Amino acid sequence: MGLRGAILAAAVLLLSSCFAMVRMGPGTVTVRDAITVSSDGGWNRLDVPGGGGGEVWTSDGLSLDVLTFFVAIKDGDPLVPAPMGTRRTPPAFRAAMLPHQIVELFEASATQDGSTFRLERLAPSAFASADGFRFEFSMTRKRDDVALRGFAYGAVVKGKLYLVTFRAPRIHYYAKHLPRAEATVRSALIKP
Image 1 (cartoon, rainbow, N blue to C red):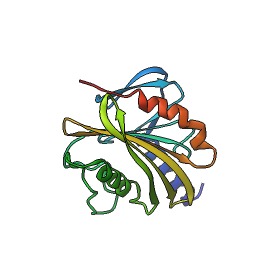
Image 2 (cartoon, rainbow, N blue to C red; image 1 turned 30 degrees about the horizontal axis):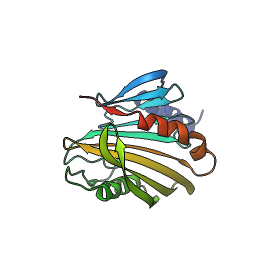
Image 3 (cartoon, rainbow, N blue to C red; image 1 turned 180 degrees about the horizontal axis):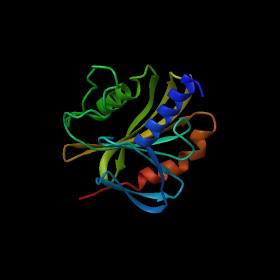
Image 4 (cartoon, one colour; image 1 turned 90 degrees about the horizontal axis):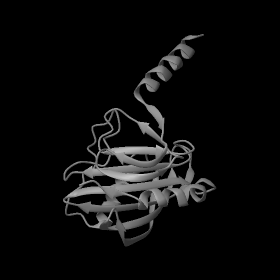
């Protein structure tokens, strides 16, 4: 094994010690001690140390489908941390934000890597037993130029943001997982 192979092996070991994929069985699942959802048993949870208010689930792999939970985001906190190696401060959630402003916050967070985003629809919708909103979007992922489709449900409850998004490649994977992802998100309940 050459130097390049040794560096690659060390990187894989380092990354594997930081992230763990956990298969989730069917039933009620608690996300970040803030909401519960019903899982059909077909999801895997990515455990990231220091993941903040977010949690990521996938069925077929992170480049093929991603269900992201942003739960109990407090006023002044960002949805996602700043990218490593940058001093840029990500935009923060404000409790007084309107739904279109929360969509803009999500867009700014989702496009930090240079991906493009297009809002396709935004409408009021119940979410987690609260008055909330639902939006649909399309994206082009910068790293591989893959066209994605997605949806999100959100609500601000007691000054905290609860937002769940799903996105997958437009070809095959979005349609494949859409019913399951919708059912999971629609089952969400905020814990008292």
